[in-house]
Amino acid sequence: MTQFTDLGLAKPILKALTAEGYVTPTPIQAQAIPAVMLGKDLLGIAQTGTGKTAAFALPILHRLSEDRKPAPRRGCRCLVLSPTRELASQIAESFRTYGSGLGMTVAVVFGGAKYGPQIKALTSGVDILVATPGRLIDHLGERTADLSSTEILVLDEADQMLDLGFLQPIRRIVSGMSRKRQNLFFSATMPTEIGKLAKELLVEPVTVTVTPVSSTAERVEQQLLFIEAPRKRALLAELFESSKVSRALVFTRTKRGADRVAKYLEDAGVSSGAIHGDKTQSQRERALAAFKAGKVRALIATDIAARGIDVDGVTHVIQYELPQTPEAYVHRIGRTARAGAAGIAISFCADDERALLKDIQKLTRQTIPAFDRRNDKVLQAVTAATTSGPAAEQSLPQAKTRGGGAGANGPRAAKPHNHRPRGHEGKPGGDRQGRPEGRSEGQRSGQGAQRQGQGRGQGGGQGGQGAKTGQPRSIASTAPVAKWDPLKA
Ligand code: AMP
Image 1 (cartoon, rainbow, N blue to C red):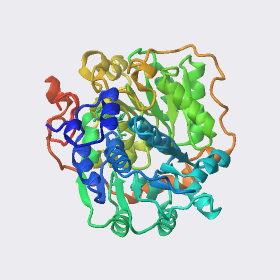
Image 2: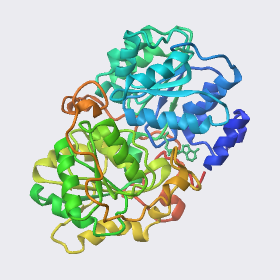
Image 3: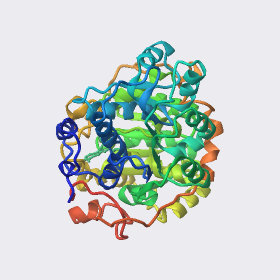
Image 4: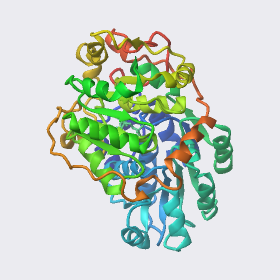
């Protein structure tokens, strides 16, 4: 089994990895790191939770440190494009963590934040720039950024870029870059448009495919509750009566819905925050930080806002409303199965959502077990799995949450905090700067339907959580699936 120490990474990087508690590379890391270290282009078919950030950050840091030169003025040596601000921040945090012993400079540029500090960082040049496309285009237009000397380009979550209407902006950004550069391209799925973009950007790439979309669905324990829409709120609050639901991400379809649910839960005594495109950047950051720190038990989110959010120890993902696209269902439940850990996903389904459910079950090739609301045992059933099963203990050994680290974030399953004073979060509404960039969430939501789940049924069959513990953790765990089991690795 390959270890990080076998890969030839610079010593300070290995030291940072040891400090993070990372010993064994995930499959995408084991395959991608050597190729990227050699300067090759890479096509990575992988979703978040596979360790893909380190798969590109580690070899990039290595390459830049082996060939030290001053960062170009107004530019960067490496540009990482991310679809959302949250993901951009997390990627920058990862670079800072892994590169802490290298003295590399890292800057983040995204919409909704002040221009001043971004211009200041860009003026002197940085080694690594992480940016969302819209704001970067603004900087290029104002000539406060210049990418003509950038040596490495990373495009992360390309399929999400497509959903957000960022393909043209990306082409514009790339047109100002030198052709002599290394390109790394990551996408969870490969719809036609994304395949086309990959072909345009990549030169003889090494292709790495891991964790097919459906295997997330197989790793997460899923529950379905048929419930009339007006009764959802009360049922949701009831779920939080179980202390097992200690850190839950709740998905709603609309921004207003997210606010309403957060308010209802607060009124019911469940500490909650909301995160969506109408929140200001600082409101979003505050809500996410409170959730990460275990200060709020429930984070109510829309799909776009939650995309790429990397919070360890999410015990439950609750789909208050089913998403418009089945891919979004898989992305949602993946929030509770970070890097090989198991989790529980509970979905509410009203009568008018049955068609959506059908699409989801088709994509995941699973029938989600349904519980009957009239059965008194239902709440016990949907929340009990964390008590008996190994899910609660199954987290990465010693691995830390990005940035803050395990010490800063406390135990993975945070204690419930029911009595947070009201008014902690920013008010709903506010300016519209808080959305990722570009279009409204409403405009975006339908577009994912163009995408097709791909890459299913591939991979190494390394055994799942169930295999490790002897207890099947998911309804489909009998099927051989490609997934990374950190406990086995
Ligand atoms: P990502 O797919 O980049 O979003 O990473 C998912 C999570 O896995 C993050 O919380 C990382 O900190 C964690 N992680 C990444 N690589 C490793 C590794 N080799 N060992 C343990 N944890 C890891």
